[in-house]
Image (cartoon, rainbow, N blue to C red; front, side, top):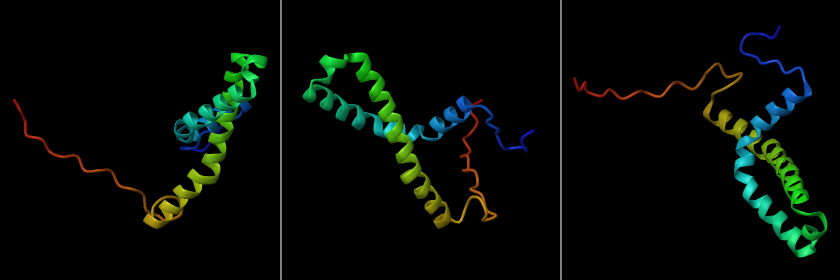
Length: 109
């Protein structure tokens, strides 16, 4: 059994889904650029007429996921580690980010 607070991913599908979840912000940021580049490539080379729209959709999805994984691994993770070190929070520092204060609102009864 996995220790408390740790998720255990046994299957390949669960590990892949967790990886997509980790890279979801990079996917959100990168997908418009990748899809536009793919559209330009498919139209200018004529691949859209040879392979059809389903090939475009499948290849755009695969390449977008690949770019998101690479962006997450090479940019997002190192930048997050650096920011955590700079702030002195996170794993290994003994400090965690505190919760934000909630403003007190007057009662309206």
